[in-house]
Length: 593
Image (cartoon, rainbow, N blue to C red; front, side, top):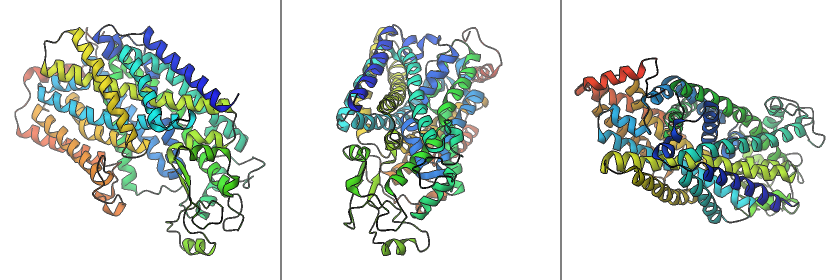
């Protein structure tokens, strides 16, 4: 069976499964719509959390980042997993014990202020729409390649699928859909990795193959360790060593911290811990989620390294600099032609020799650029979108068509699962926190449920537009969302739980300071609907910290402003201080049970 037909069948079956689950689990109350009736088993919730978490950034983009950044890409691995330790220890059980539907609702009650709740909703919307832009881009990339449609068509189809199961099922439908999506995406990620690891090193365990010797008979580096061979070939082409971070220590620290703290502050992740029956289930859910996430995250470094090796050796077929050492364009493999059709891979023959020169034409390696000119090279001729690496890897490695179709289904599952969770958070922020909590408190449950579904529909349209016009590649856009979460919501949630003297004035001032600073910094260097104001280069960054890591600075400013303002203004009322003490008491309340 040809790849196109097989892809339609596999993806179509997965869609039928998701929609079937949505119909089976249709929400009939606001409790089921927002928090799945608080009846989800911790293991199922851990699996759903993992799917909600392992978005297009994890499935599609993270290994691509690692492939091109090498060791420097480890900040994403460390940051995106470390946050679950903070969640399990510092936030999840306390928020579940409080027992509300949403993060803004907790902030509004804890800080006895509708204004604080409203500011939290604004932060939530900024975070969620920034995050969902990356997911919708992931949907478009997968569809544009594997279903052979243009990006807009792919986005429309993806938006339609999300609309059906998010609007019908709410959190209840999304939870059980995400359990199915986790199974799909983890199989789709690990099966190709096992194939490629075995073909390249003879070891089917990707985590071990990563540090193994290349045994493939057709490899020019047979007998060498994979990472050593990769270091040699990329440095010969003017790139930095694969095992070199390529980032300053302060930037790596800031990005890791922003991603870690941002994880613990993301509303669509936090709300998952409101869906379990008991307080202790919230903590165990975080543990199960980390276990399920680790199944993919420990494979990602191997996938990234093998993808970079396979891509480079496909193009550099012989000795670097030799007349016939580069792949002739007319002999390019079929996978290159297919990805060229999407516009995510392109070739420009700058020296008119009919061969593909893929190298770092901005290299700082001493003597490399003059040497490249002697070889007749006139600039890098192959542009590769790093977001395609995981999707293209099975094709590059010439794996069976059913594996390639499975990867397509996994990529779509990863993007749709997180998009649905984010859209529900946006919906609850608008219908439950803004409409019911602030504008029309007397609204009926039926009207609130209708408003939530309308809000999801509108949010899907906005998300589709952002997916078509994102401010960067998938993982980069997602990193911005984490920075916004770290700098706006995490400090006020943490201080709201552990410092009873934290007041509404401090919370509002802190959230606004962190959000405005971080968003302003990102806009200055990355644009986001406008052209960048300042060149995005290390010598222009504040303290040498990139836009991806600036959320760490925004977080510190939030903590500092919130603390100072709280000290200079009146303490919270006594009943609020008693509430904070009760939340921290290590016993479940009747409501939580």
